[in-house]
Structures are given as structure tokens and as C-alpha cells.
Image (cartoon, rainbow, N blue to C red; front, side):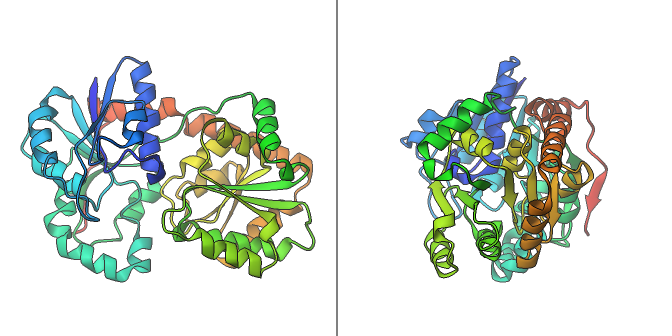
Length: 392
């Protein structure tokens, strides 16, 4: 099968949607399928050249909306050579452009919303939501309405998507989502990471690994850490990830003011062995996010056998709780303190048992094999989308 992904950018700092495209694409390619992507990036960008799948970069684009006049003509000319087109994400021109090019074409297109219809955005950014309402009926509403299927990675995401706009119509379908199995040489990767970060030896490390953004609850983490600093002198927090909004400086000032600046490390974006070494050096992964569609890093942590401490706004929280693969609490300051309090109250055997449960859950639900197979099934018609859901 030959698949084309349409996504705004191949920049790895853009987060989970691109990582899902990359990992699923690599798996499908290993099975003999062809996977390519089209983006609005400048083709001269290094990350375009380094991406492991063929990238058709049509940029540079203009403005925050990412308008690109080359996208529609390119899709009209080339889409027919693919069996299906997968649109990743909303709210930028790539999704509307795909609809313009494909709505009357013979090539089916499918849409991953990647959590972008979560009502958290509506509540948190009401002015932006009002702006979206202005073009919603003419753009993204039509993108979803005319898709062969709108794909969600959890039942929680599907239900939440219905709450953002009363004008909503889609052939909804929940499919498996996941990530590659982590490397299993944990001892080597841990030692390599600790050799590069000797100040972490002997520490009880908690790892946050995600984009550093206000919706991720990083400030809650620092405040919660400060609450246990006096009684837990070995506790140390790693905040790893790209700073997309310039928030790190404020967070560092917060840590300084709370007296825990020396208890927080800021390594930036980690990749390859450094990323896996960070996972294997941590006793738990923590993400008190206010909104998280899936959380590939959550799945990666479980794949490493690392328990996950997450908020109930991470859409796979029900699975984590039911399998006792971690601890779940509200996305508040008190909720984040509760995550740490419960974790610190566990004895070593209880923590090890939780890690085993995390690994078992990963293997059952969140492998890249299941993710690739799920997409193929829906594209090939072996897995039929649910009946159309209409909010109006």
C-alpha cells in the first residue's frame, strides 16, 4: 500500500503528531509499504533532509496559518498515485488545503485530529476559540465532514472532540496508537546518561520529557517538588524538551524563588541514546498535563518499564489506572502533590510491580505494530468507521 501523510511541518520539535507519523511510517516501510509526507517546510531545512521518510517540502510558507499556495496544485497532481492520504492535525492551512484538493478526488483521505478538538483549548483560549469559530464552518468543519474517517487514538479523545463546536459532523473511528519498543540495553544506556550527568548519581530522578508549554503543567511540577524538597533530599527533577514559547526562563526563576533550582535539570530536547538513558535513569515519568491527546512519551516510559505519574487530562489515564501502571490525579497543584505523595509512599517492591504493569500495558496496547496495523485496517476497509456523529 502507498500512503501519503499531510502535516504542517517535519520539524521534530513540533511534538507527538510528527513522531507518530515517523514511527508508524518506519514500521509500515519495514513491512513493504510506501510512506511519504508532504509539508509546508522550507526544503533547505536540515530536519527535512534528515527525516527518515521521503519529504515533499513545499515551503517556505507565510504567516502563522502556514498558507502555502503550492499545496493544492501539488496534491491535485500527485495524490492519485497514493492509495490514501492521511491528514495530521487541524487549524493550519495544510488540512484545509488537503480538503480543497481531495474533496472531489478519487483518493480517500483520513484525518487524525491529534487532540486539537479538545475543549481545554476552548476554555483556556476563548478569544482564539472565537477566531476559530469564524472560519470553522468554511474550513475545518468541512475537512472532518468529508473525510473517509476521522481517527482518534482513544475513546476519551473522541468524546472530548464533540464538545468544542456544536456544528460538528464526522465518521468517527478509534484506532490503536503507540510507539516503537525501546532498546533493551537499559544498563548501558543508564550508565552512559549518568556519566554525562554525574550530578544525578544516587538521586531519585523524576523525568518530564515533552514540549515545554503551559499546557504541560511544568509549573505544577516545580511547585510540587518544592513541597517535598525538605523531606526528600535525594529527589531530583529532569525537565527535558524543546522550549517552544520561551517559558523556561520563567520556570527557572520559579525554581530559584522556591529554593529548588539545584534540584531541577534542563537538558533541552533529548534524542537517541540520551533520551533512552534519561528514561532508564528515572524511577518514574511524570506529566501533570492540562491537555494531552495521547502522550507518546508516556507510552515510551511504559515501554521502558517505568511507572507513569500523570494527570487525568492525559487521554490514556483510564488504561493506566485500570492496569495499575502508574498514578493518576487531577491537573492541579494539589493533584500534582498527590502524585508525588503517593509515589513516595510506595515501597521498592510496589514500585517494581508498577513498572512491570507499565511494561505489560505497553505490550498489550501501545506498540507501533498495533498502530501500523490499525491504520492499514481502516484504510483498506477491514475496520469500518462508526456511524456518522453529528452535533447538529
